[in-house]
Image (cartoon, rainbow, N blue to C red; front, side):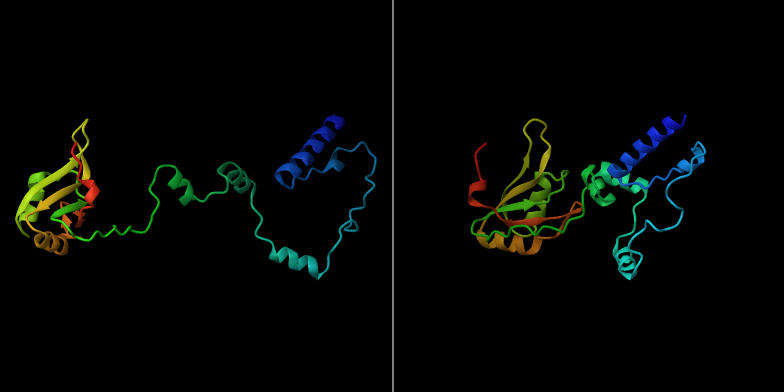
Length: 189
């Protein structure tokens, strides 16, 4: 019986060195009558001076067993990092869209509601000037909007006025991004 307890004690000590836990087993309660060679006093303890107290104060608070287990398996991440990794969108600063100088009557309309149609855009931009064409870009296989569109105005001046009036305006629950279209974006499909 005592041999088995000593083996368990040795295993616990090796686990202590791996995990860093302080597991104390009082082997004296299982003794065979022999006294321990160590005295019960603190004679084996070294460094009881003020330097030791300063080191203990400077140490970070000791982690509990479960905190160590969570840090080991969770790689020490916080809840915000873990939730971001599990599919939740982390909070990030709002991205400023790239401002393209209006040099042609063709406009890019971004951050568009998925429910917006070409006729909605036609009506919205007709309040600013004459619209030649409005095209909502959508996926081919299911015809769902990609969330942006191109609007062709009559003149460059009307396009500039549309950017001034409609950029960052609320439309169908979203703030529009209206800017000049890049020249390479207009492609035949």
